[in-house]
Every structure is written in C-alpha cells, then in structure tokens.
Length: 450
Image 1 (cartoon, rainbow, N blue to C red):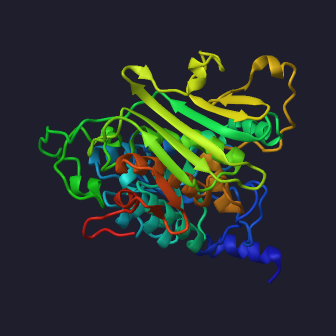
Image 2 (image 1 turned 90 degrees about the horizontal axis):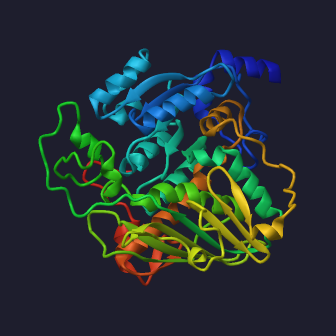
C-alpha cells in the first residue's frame, strides 16, 4: 500500500483505532516535531470527553473551542462528567449533543472518545488521569498535575508507557513573554544564573477542619466528589472552590501558582529534580494550608547551568507581603509585582506573565534581545490537539510537567513534615526524614487505586 493509500485508509476506515494506538515522538518542539505514525487531516475533529465542567473547567472548554487546532474549526465535545448535576446541566445546555455522567469511570467507557480534558480538584487529578491513560486516551490535565509527589511520578511514567499525547494546563507557558525570557536567558544576557526568587501575594489558607456540616445539596454526589480521599462530612467550606485551602484536597498557594511561576525557571534553565528543599512558615495546621510560606530549593549543576538556589515566597506575614530581600536592600524597583527574579553573574532579569525587565536598567540601556527562535504558540489546548492530529509533543507534556509538579509538591511536603528534605529522586525518598513520607506518597481509601 502506498503512503497516500495508507493516509486515506487511516482517515476514512480506522481513524478511531488509529488515534488510540498512535505513538508520538518524544523530541522536538510540538509544531515542528515529526512522529513515527502517519498524520490525519488537521481539519478532522477530535471527539473529546471533559471531566469537570464548572469554573476553570468551563473556561477550559471555552478556550479549547476558541483556540481549536484549525482556525474557524472546533472539536467535538461528546461527553461531560461532573459530580454536581447543576453544573452538569449548565454544560449540557452548552453542548447538547454530549452524553453526561457523574462518575468519570463511566465516561471513559464511552466508545469513540479520542481524548480527555480533566479539570477537577487536585485530589482527583491522578486517578482520573491514570484511568484515561490506561484506557488509551490522550489527556489534558489542569495544574498541578497531581495532589502528591508519588502520583506525579506515576503519571509521568504512565504517559510514557502508554504513548499518549499529554499536556498540563499551565496556560502561561503558551504566551509569548515566557518564550522571550527563555531566549534572553539562554543567550547569556545576564550570564550564568545562580539564584532565582519567585514570589506572589496570593493566599489560600484555612484554620482547622470546617465545623459547619449541613446536609449535602441534592445536586452533589459528595462521595464521588471526595473520590480517593478518606471520607469526611460535607461542608460548603470545601465546595465549589475553597477546597484548595485544605490539605485533603489541595495544596494551597504553592501547588497552584508554583506550577505557573516556577515553570519559567524550569524551562529557561533546564531544571529537573532538586537535591533539597527546606521551608519556613507559620505553625503547621494539620487541615489548612499556610497563609505564608518560604521554600528554599537547591539544584545541582546541569550541563552548562551551574548549581542553583531557587526560593519561593507567598502570602503575608504579620500583614506584610513575604518577598525577596532585594526589595528591602533597594536592589530592585519597589513597584515590581508578583513574578520571578533571575540573578546572574552579569545582571538580573525580572519577569511576570506578560513582561520582563533587565536589571539594573541603566546597565542594559540599548540592549537588543536575541532573534526569536521559539515560535509562537497557537494556544495551550491547540498545541495538545494539533499534536494528537499531526504528531509531535506539546511543550507541557507530562514528562516535563510531571517533574515540575513533583518539585512544587516537595515544598509542601517539607513544610508539613517540619524538616528539610534531602531528595533522593531515583528512589522517591526524603533521606533521613521519614516524617515526610506520609506527605510524599499517596494514600487512597478502599475501592480507589492508580
């Protein structure tokens, strides 16, 4: 059979089977990388199932329809799942042809689904993602990729094993500013980078377990919402948003915004696993995430990148924003907002989501940035969709984002254990800190498994 005949055959006779069995390339940028499997038409729509339909999940669906993989086209939303029938009904009204479910495991049984988008609370990311990978679906999952370090490792390995096209929802990664910062840093504009400081004033916190436990709303399946986590009484303090403030279901500010901001350091500097992390913050609350936190990571030399110290700061201590000492020392402008500060041998670079500044500004007057080498992205969802259709690897695939998530979550594990973590990445162990193990490994209630 000729290549042309194979192309026609795959597209007209066996497209669904082909999509399930296709293996993607593991090197190269997604829009130029070539896969070992024949391409399907970029104009043909994928059938997508969506797990989680409200808030960020609905935004994902809207963005996915807007971006698509082809201008003027959109993918088929053929299945919707939500444990809340009210939210499910709203999504059904927007996508009336889609079948609906409350249990994501039933959605994955539906025939003809090519790919799955997961936008549930953190504690169900891993179980839903693993089930989707094992059932042969390509997966897009919101950040953080998982709730625990061990889950991040398991999901990263499963994505590789099942050869699925994957993407984590760190949408800022697809914006142009991060691309320009990567180019500037990798061109050597500020010399070798030895420190990175990352800060944000956002606060997700709670004190103790909620005391208000009214009856479960009729539209909510509370048992399914809890998923693999040990059952506890329903409280409106958890649902639909503030679950992020509680260790049982989320990871506070670090697990949420860390995946966005620390992402830039990982991309620009080629970081992988930290060798250690130590934290400071308020007294640990066994239920609620902290109002402020400082996490100090250390990374080994990687290629030409020298050993690095990366420090995370969030929240407010005694009403004052927790930020790098550079502000108090007058080394950087006082009006710089949330972001990252890269400290190199020849200068500094500050960046947030949308812009960057080289510091001291007087030293970089007339600076000409390097030529653009990283192409603009069609969008975080479109990268994923295009890679499924035509080959390649999205930039926030689970190999990359799994490592990033693992590091972010290690900060929380160090804080909750009250000790420094010396990280044995190979064996997934905190050396000399057995107290951290309970926060590194996942623990599911009976009936749930990866």
